[in-house]
Length: 90
Ligand SMILES: [Cu+2]
Image 1 (spheres, rainbow, N blue to C red):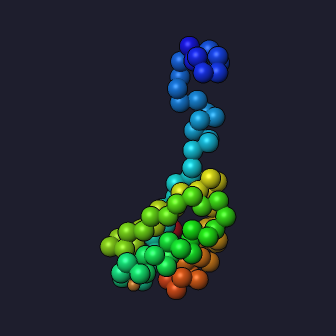
Image 2 (tube, protein in one colour):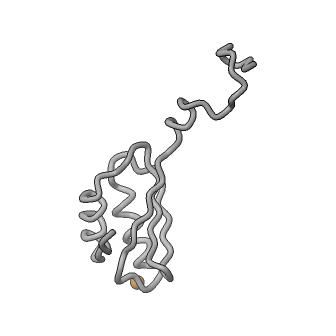
């Protein structure tokens, strides 16, 4: 039995807990070649409302974005565009 909230369940992966976790989405960005590219993309994408963290892998072009809610693909595209790179089609 859960003693924290007295809900009576032994399941520690309750829906509420899952929903409160940040959303993680991965995007593919083309044109990045160095750490500066990565930080530009990371900075722009990080400005999108709700974004909690951005991880960029220059080698693979993968951009991992953590946010409190699912992001608008267009918002991510605009941010990547602003940084001077292109979001690869999903
Ligand atoms: Cu660069």
